[in-house]
Image 1: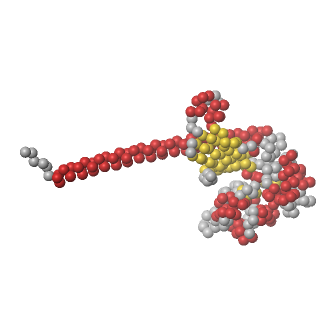
Image 2: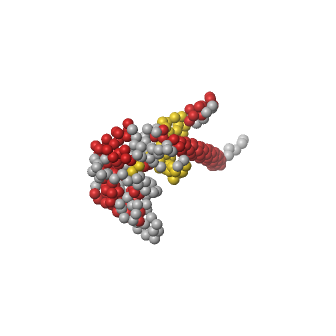
Image 3: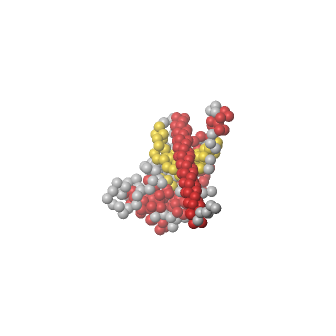
Length: 318
């Protein structure tokens, strides 16, 4: 008669088998997860590379439009909102462009990508670099900024704090030894460095900008609030009449504004213009479930359009 093995030995063998199976399952799951993560990382890198190339192409498209606009207006440089560059590019599927170029049915086999963009006049807004052209602020420029702050609903304390910190940042931009002054902002969003809260920055953003050098305001594209702030004694109703007048016939010369301005208002070419050289190019690419936005500042010099800076923008939450 065969003797049965002891129960403890059978239980130990079963436990060892379970441990081995568990170890193999864990290693297999780890390998699958690593493979999945590697594929996801590769897909994200590929999508980011594709987006970079597509948005770079959109920037080149905008530069071409601005160059052709400059070529068409060589005799009389004028920029207004009725030109081609001011028409935004509505969201369109990239396969539409591929099919137009002869892609045919193969164009639909690509990724589900949609491109949109717009060119806006950076000189339609008031440039904060104008306030401190020299070490001391220009009184007229200072009053312009104060009127814009008042239109945005900023209190006197916030306006004074902005001017003081802007003066400190402008005067110390070449002074690397003083670490107690704020950095000079490069964009409107960075005005928080100068003591403004989020609400004040949001209200000011449609009317002001920060450009590397002082620039005149283009009266063919500026909103009425900016136009009213530029002149002493000009109210919003009068500025609105200027906007209505340019919509039917853009201003070709600064002298065309004289009948619409207060008597004796100076038409300084350093502060006012009817054309622009700085533009913001915004591009937005929707690739499958990813949204990539990019914003660039370009400067036009004659027929040359050079890139000043480019930044990736965090898409706004839906």
